[in-house]
Image 1 (cartoon, rainbow, N blue to C red):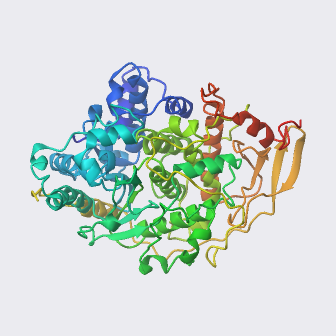
Image 2 (tube, rainbow, N blue to C red):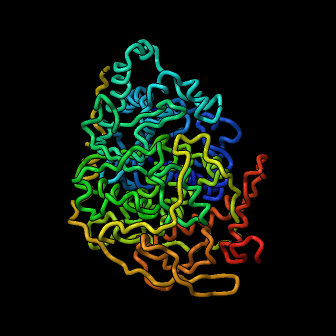
Length: 597
């Protein structure tokens, strides 16, 4: 790991002034092409295919550098974690162009590197606690859940079984050191040591709140506990943290979302499955201001559940508390990036983070950094129809209202002008398999309940001496920001109609959104396909709504022209159905019966 300045933009300007031609910046289409072609692995970036990944990482650093000064945790060849970025960004404070010229790091880089190396064995797949968003001087972090004894003691066999039989699935993760190996005779001593480093890292980052998205207390495969979690740590090592159990369906559930023509309304997870044993548990002091009936969480559909969890996370990070937040699921590469990406986009839409980035730029950053470079297996998920990645960005239409805003002032910040709209020429769909993921540690089965959900709320030890980074970043934030008054929410009325554009012309139809969605799209739509690119109406939109709709439009346009238009070879097993048929029905060219034109 080495310190680095967040000055990629300055470097680019210097190159331009010297007369050297600038290489074309990688676009979202190129990113999605690479993303849908192969899973990112840090150790594979040195080959011929590594040039594309290097361009993507360089672009991410440049985008981070627009608004922040940062240091870089070097992970070349996956030395720390094989499915984390080669250059892990440690955001230190917001900065202006002038401040970038006088950047002084506030972190002890060498000691942080040592702590990261020691703590990584505490978590599943070596995916240690990593800060990814900086808001009000507080770190929003991501990771995998805690590793169980099976992973600590049997990495080789464990990795082979639970990564789908890939021999090199864990070759990038170091074995337990000889020092730790000498302690294997005592499970308690080993867990004290390994998890002790994990706790030190959490404290260094000033993290207090840990949000666990697992639907299990411990993940069980073939009758063996393969992972654990903070909420069931027998020694209560994480008792000083505020633990939240907010169970959320794994990636397999999103096959049901795809099979229902991408309709999340009315799609309810089956909480009665045998392996689901983690109840929702949130301290009362975190829920009193949200006016949500949390006892009804098992009746919420996918829209309500995602909305309410996002409100909770925004409330935590937007509180007057100086503490940071950790979000994790099991492996930390499906549900975790979903909420990290929604948090980043929601805060950006309010003009609170990444303030200089345009809609296409923040979209590129979150797709590249939060999803691709942190190891989301898009190829595998697409082949099985588990489209949690698509759900994330299509879901933006459900968080456009001001009730999701983190702004605490009545007057919103002046936000950059929006870009031009986007168009789509062709629409098609991928093929799908009928089975779940072999590589996922998430749930294996799910159930679709067609009944509408109930209403949500009535509203809409070896010592490593480190100085906590959180205190320093918070001090830097306070220096440049004044305290904000109490929050004010704006309530926009629901539109009664969506206008649909079809091959026959413009027609009007009632919105198909369920009562769980508080606001309609307010957009012209092309047919009823999930890949429609919204066209703005003449009606005035809020700044937040405009920005999020532009991000969603940009995503749908790029996705439909890359992933959505890619032909997939038939499966040898014959289990893959043609999703093109679903798209044809979706745009109204064919009825629900495949034999009806």
